[in-house]
Length: 260
Length: 260
Image 1 (tube, rainbow over the protein chains, first blue to last red):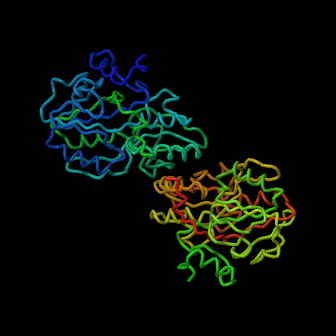
Image 2 (cartoon, rainbow over the protein chains, first blue to last red; image 1 turned 45 degrees about the vertical axis):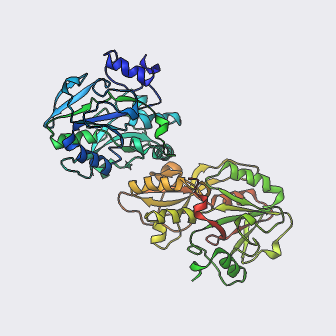
Image 3 (cartoon, chains in turn yellow, green; image 1 turned 180 degrees about the vertical axis):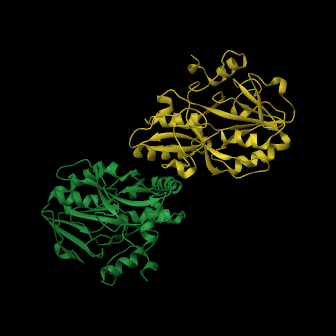
């Protein structure tokens, strides 16, 4: 029912507690963002981590310290406008909450990162299948052996999401996603999973496995779970993220992110 | 020595019989073309064959009937400015000659098609290896089971050229070649050769095999040999092409073919 709401209307429902959970498929056509919130003391290192690792951490917006708005993304309050948040203390998940007003501090900095929903929409719009959507599953995600470049305490192996395609569609998917570097861009790998340290596609580290047909190749995209691992590795006294699938819905249109 | 000549200087040497054979590596930076010459009676069907099959037959220029010039490609005479020509009668190769002045007729139409030299240069300029160049071999080419769309008497299975890459370079190669649809564009297949009817990569139908390293994928591009097969299938009373590797060197720069 929420799929016909504008992004602003959807955020107001979320703020009012009337939309709980996953934002997948809501406000189609609009950019949804991964969210990371952390103290200003570590903001520079994290920002540089994003700059160094743009495929898993494509930055769309950074807030001012203590400021819960992100005017470039719409009229929003980051403390209330995400359906669910995860709170980490010293790198450990300590809870999941629908509102972080009580946790807000005047040194917190918000980072909004691109998310795969945008490129999945572009793939579907071109007539390509997105297997996890066809099967109604969460996309399968794997910890690869690809090293991110570290920045201060932030370090991680790259997490990748996988979608299978026949070769011709794989080539087309690379072309389509290359237009969208702000939402992970082109795949980082295709073909043999073992070459990036993935032993078994049927055992994803996150999400759910999807069917791979005869003659299909697995394509692997850098995934927004990567910065969450970097955040945990840094063991910050406090860090907050969105809960998986419960994204910040923005007023930006997916098409505005196309570089071509 | 010819590699420092301008395209016009090189054509004059070819015309004078001072440059014989392969044009690979000559006049770097400039577009070289596959050439097909046939009677006006079949020109429309062949032009439509190119339009229907733009990946193997990317049209760069078409001459006027009986006119041996192609002003858009430089000050040239198609009867003398290609190092070697193949003459086909009733679909059979009847000879190879350095000059077709004696064969010229006022109903002959010239077609200039893009060639892989241009995209190979773009790949090298981006720092990617081109294995056939590293190994000093002709690129391996294979008759695939991919059907071209027929036009009149012109019909063929698509011939593809193969270059191996690791996955990350394969993705980059797809991005680079996508900018150059006029020289075959993005690959048509990657990965398992059997899926496009190729049984054994070590046994190319044309050219020479190249080494494939562990972890590399074969990438397959539509190839300019395809229109030669279509020409043979049509069994025209007379048709003329360049000899393999002995291309028309034009004044167009490769970069001018980039669509982006």
